[in-house]
Image 1 (cartoon, rainbow, N blue to C red):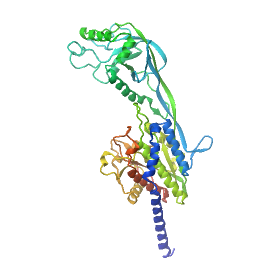
Image 2: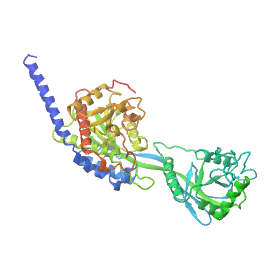
Image 3: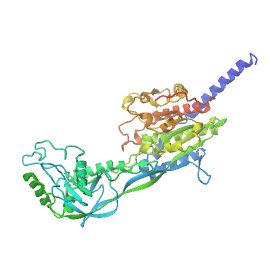
Image 4: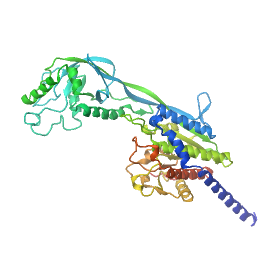
Length: 533
């Protein structure tokens, strides 16, 4: 090689590199606040009802993403059973949920989470009719005993909430103003249920001290709490339905079950207080019909994938991900639109896909392939990304990295005075090269403040483990998680489009673009050379 050739080739290399950089700026700038907002007004619209995993609204969002991928020329990549290709990667989630639950007397049927609430789990698949026995306060002690001569075997015991007091206002059991274990904490109801079941009772009905609107509000609150019993899982699971469980009912419902008037029940309570003696079993036994069905469903949902094939390094792939789902409708009927969580990430994927697709159409396609993927099940347990990494359409060994976007449309309290920031999490955990590329891409493009607060392994929020990138990271695929923090509307109905800072968001998406551009076009694949917590 002559001395003349060396400078010439060096100049040519610099020229090509500079040209490539100029081209990347052109396509990055095609990512605009206007386009992000246009997509988000669809993804976070009320008509999608909060995009709960597997819901019709979530499936509408998935169809929107797939249709957009198709319109810009991305290819389907998931192989269906018949050998055809699809944009959808379907998978099933197992769900235990409440089916039909009611209590009924001869006069009326009472509905679950409307007329009463249920604490704990039962599984009464078909209706049972059992005797109802009045068991006072459902307490056993040396000073006061509701079970002294009461047979409750195979019956439903109806007990009053709390514990009795004497004429002076002191509790009968403690002898002073301090309540005993039967009413002094949140576990008191469980002590009463354990006692009743140890005596042979089949069901426990607790009469609430709350009345009117206060009781109605408590029923609504407990309905929200009961959603934890409707959890989703990637695999079938069993649950214990033989532990403590109690129906908490209103005073009016108790009167119907006992077939007495309000004055009669008040007289019983007053007599217990004045004489300090139990009146359990003093009322004729009635009957109640009970059904509390636990059922298992399979909830079908789907990840959505669009494939952009690379050129000379097409067997290696960059993943760019965000989650499509949100938490749906609250128990009080309010829609949680999830504009930031993670509508902001979902529409960022659309804009990134369009920018890279446009580059390819104009002869500047990436050397490595890129998969743009919106996953579901994130809000339930990172299920979509777990399913993908367990069933990858491109081997994880060929996956260079995952760039994951989750909540980048707002600011948190720590950055109210400076919105030009983004939290980066995980960039240095597995690859020092990935971290360096990210830093350099930021300097050459948007020059945001890169905040690594949540990248600290001692951070109590543990965000590194709480979004979809983690399922890639635990499989030794380098990751970057882009995030702008939690705000006052996190998982609340106020997370709406009107509060999204699209100018800020577009800059972060451009940063992701420049990072992905470098990763997909550089000569050497980034190395996995770190193992940080």
